[in-house]
Image 1 (cartoon, helix red, strand yellow):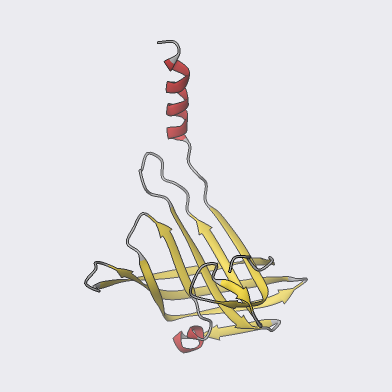
Image 2 (spheres, rainbow, N blue to C red; image 1 turned 90 degrees about the horizontal axis):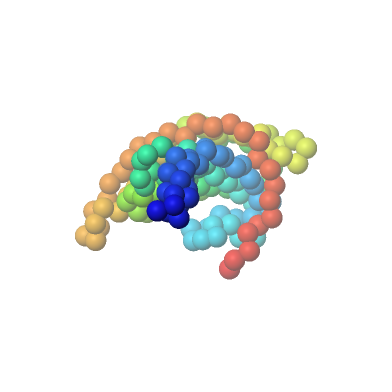
Length: 164
């Protein structure tokens, strides 16, 4: 019985631990955005990635949620895009990672995004309305969920991921 006590304590302790929320903002110079993993390849544009992992809820199973939001702009030192038509030029892609239906795409419904480059980093502000499209079943039934992503932050340069 005494041998099981440490194991029981570890189990109880791990059940109480949660992962905190975190956000990483990166950009890739001389890159292009593609539809398949690794999503970024060498090209002639700037590709931005905002990765956000939500905090786990205590005592909730399968609540883990993270998302990667990518967009691409021409090489420049500042930009401003507003409205659905202009935002669609940015190839905005939102990839949710969760215990949920498979997201098969997204559409842009409105918003704005702007950025300025300074000292090798980008300061970006965004307020984007998207509709995520989920595959519901094998008969090509799809569901849409409208969401808003509002953020501002500094994006730091990273090397283009290796992979293809």
